Length: 465
Image (cartoon, rainbow, N blue to C red):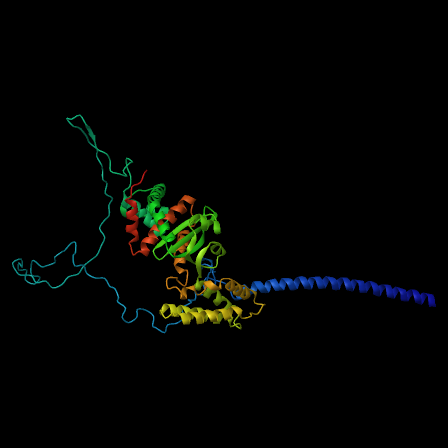
């Protein structure tokens, strides 16, 4: 092999190595891109996995119980162990079935003949030896009252014609007891319309159609409107107002059920919006002289008010989640302990200005503490509390301010119970009917009144067909 051939062979080797190098570079670039893509995917999957390692549920977040996954662990209470045994405590007055002092029917049981010899005992003096009572319900049948009109001519020439009592305008109609029972079963006991018709037919021999039940509910709503506005004014005139909202399914479209309440009144309304517009439409008077007790939903802070109180139950649930997810970080447990301490002082009526200042001072120190920036959700939580720092322990300085928004949650939870039973409202009219009658019933319960009697008082009000 001469020198020229060797040079050509070497050039061939060099070109082949160059091509292999280019292929390796391309492969390396492709692998680098795949590595970057897999790293991103791995990060996303790890973040998703974290949700399942420490899932949010109704016990450690704002999520409602209805969103909890099946077969989940029982919701853990925020209450600390009291050390007491379960059940009634010493000194608790129990209740039992008691005999009536005025029975409606008395049945005497005595022997008229001797069971041994057969002698007539009617002339003997019988001695009372004991009694027992049976409480039962008589057969219930509808009572039909027919109203007859008469007319008469006076010799003076005046024609006297009787008129039907107020409210009786149809040839045949259902009376106030039926109206109140239908509304009570639908709104207070959550029965669907078809089950109400079955109950009325089975127990009372009343043949109402589903349309008839809806008609009576609409009639009750119209009668209750003045009372409904009175309840709203009771909330408007109060100094403390609790508020909450929840989604309401109306024929497949989402609306929002709102409640504004205080210790003496509960007002519930339906609106298309969950924003500040809904609040201004429902309560146009505003909250300038009131303290709003709410969760941290931003719409409430767009309204001008004298003050706010954040729900401590919501805060404790969030802090519980952070404690579960980040056990090495002690910021959340220390903050939880501070809230529980404040609640205990309030419960025991031992709040003083000095203790209130100490708790607020400790709270401000917690807000200033640096938090590991890698725990982004806890950092965000701290920033939110910095923004609303004046609204966490407001209940320590005013005994009338409740430390949580549980009353509002209880008021609005009834919508969820109704929706679980009936799935959804077919119309806005039906949801408004429920909200109006429910406001009357809940307000009656708050004032220690019988909720069924409250519906009866509404039913006897005059109405039009």
